[in-house]
Length: 326
Image 1 (tube, rainbow, N blue to C red):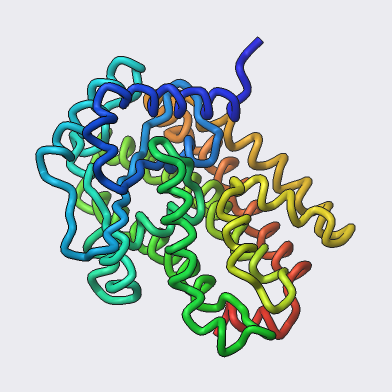
Image 2 (spheres, rainbow, N blue to C red):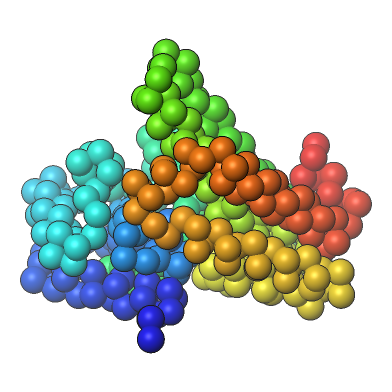
């Protein structure tokens, strides 16, 4: 009997963390954590899933940094362990393995440097789809601290606080993902022949994933935050951060009979999505090279988006919906 995705994901993450044991004496001198995002963060990994890892450092003293040699040893150990565990190679030959500092993350939040330093992506994925790999205690502490960034004004509005700042940041992340996709499509313009057909298939596959798994990651949180009665406490946000996107949708199932019906259909489409994308890259590109297959997949993705919009209408009051639009 095949191991369920959730149990498979948790077991692999645990084994990956245990693989760092030989260098723990070196790591324990520094307050930082490692967390996984992507399919492992959503607990829906399979044996072809990448290990999308981020590193977060608790720089209470903003002059403090992890020594380069320590991080080099950590990176080398992670590369060795992921190879031993037969993970796919790190994207970009490991060039995205870098440490984010929480103090800097707070200082640049909302600024142009937020995105250019990759801090924005690291923060959003931490909040929306992450699982601890190394030092869960530090991970939990830093998650709480980062949620606190969005609660600066809570004391002045303790009776009526809404996490509009956080919702706007998530919406910005979603729109950034869509813009990044459009930028990726520019690569199609100079191509011809078989190379163009392959890139069109790759673009359609990215579009499919964007409109299903990425949409779920962002709007499972937006829907829950929009459905909560004021005041929305930071503890509620922390609870939501520790749920997977699918679990966040399930949390809304009892909101109304109409919401329950929508969530049931969302769950069915998402299950079919997972079955379709858990294949080798060559198989996926072959499937998305077929125009009929591609059209059907993207039509299902459109239906998924329609259902999320319908769910937002079910769980969000008109007054709260205004914050999602304006």
